[in-house]
Length: 227
Picture 1 (cartoon, rainbow, N blue to C red):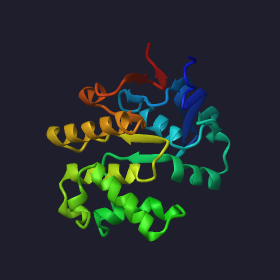
Picture 2: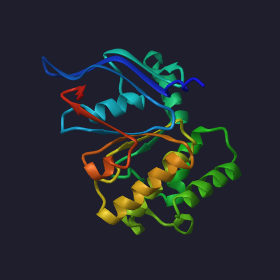
Picture 3: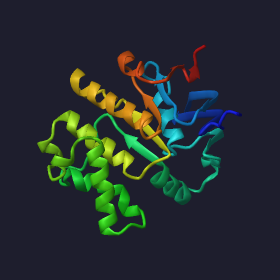
Picture 4: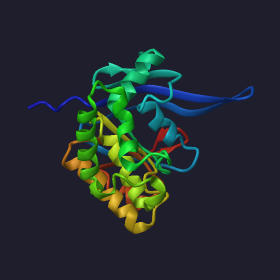
């Protein structure tokens, strides 16, 4: 039986930023695949290009040259409107500082991405309750972020990320603002998303302990992967 094609194919990607008249290279000729169902951790020092690479994979930023193909779709060739639509249906984001809206309840925060989907109010409620149940926060859905611990807020953020049933979960330092016990809970939850739901996860982290939970660890240094 032939191996399944990769879910993400990155080919000869270059990325740089301008600082005044200075061009600063960030990623240099990166080529690699991400297998379907993989849990990938990307490590490296500050300034190595980790978050830039994550943003490119998620369609938040654009390449200078090269291609990124996700599920057969070359996202580097999409117009901004089409790219925004693609992100809304295919990418779940998990951030270090949760990015929850303080004036919305946990339920309302998780529901936000679904307002872009053609769902009825009852269907949105079913999706939100299922997502919050998956992260064991069904009894906290009416609480506001300020009434939740850091670990609970990150679990709400994970529920928000999975509520659209995304193709990819991308996580930028998801345990960086948590104590060790809460971090373990979040890593356990991400492992469940991967093993039970088959989600492909790309995680950027400085934490070697968190990285060890991934199937594959890649080290980025000055815009290139180490051997």
